[in-house]
Amino acid sequence: METTRSAVHVPPGGGEAVWLVGDTYTTKVSGEQTGGAFALCEALVPPGGGPPPHVHHAEDETFVVVEGDLVFEADGRAQPASAGSVVHVPRGTAHTFSNVGSAPARMLFFYAPAGMERMFAEIGTPAEPGRAAPPPGPADVAKLLAVAAKYRFTVGPPDGE
Image 1 (cartoon, rainbow, N blue to C red):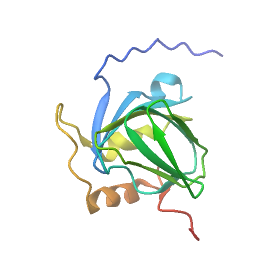
Image 2: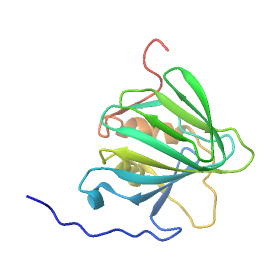
Image 3: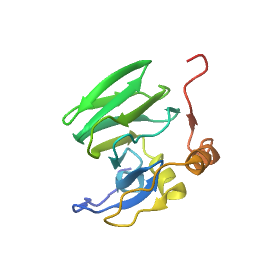
């Protein structure tokens, strides 16, 4: 049976934005809007920013760098990624990224299947328009660890790395 869904339009600046680990994450298209097929989010990462190493156990993640200079670490390798770069990280792969530039970096990222995007709304702090995210602190990692089992991810590199 085919499910009918409506087209989705998100205007510039639209979506639910939260602060987490010093970055701003905005859900642009949720799993509820795609029948669970994927979710599309945007990240605004300040210089030096990025999440701790982590592993998603239930979804693949694909990043499209729109602005800035990032370095992605996955499979034990560091890979520079400037505007126009695409990085695909299969589920089960430890990864992280950091902004190595002098200006904020912006990227879009997809989770397939959807579901992980709900974590941002659950533990992030609602972003205030026009303001940068506060610097990361121990509370951010504690929040991540508190929901890791629910969203099927682990924080930190796999054992032995």
